[in-house]
Image 1 (cartoon, one colour):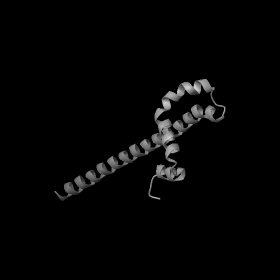
Image 2 (cartoon, rainbow, N blue to C red):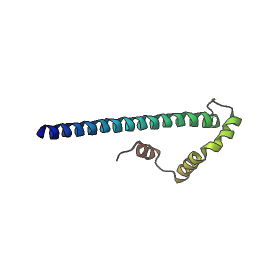
Image 3 (cartoon, rainbow, N blue to C red):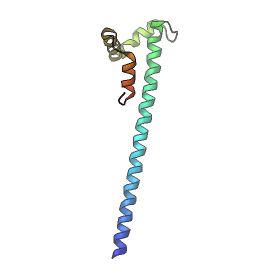
Length: 99
């Protein structure tokens, strides 16, 4: 009888371990996808906004056509320009943590 209790406890701990490993893999995958999304978004912003500031990436006409997809980012840029807040402070806040 005692052997079955010990075996049951071992199996329960093993199942818990496997579930924990599975959760860790999922969280790692999500963070990798978020990082990739941020990198692709930065590349897209460079391609679209680059010609407007003199970086030759796309034609300015195509850049203006794609500007519609950046409504939210343009609103954020506009609000930062109007408020004149600390850009480095915003950067540190976007990195997370308490600075």
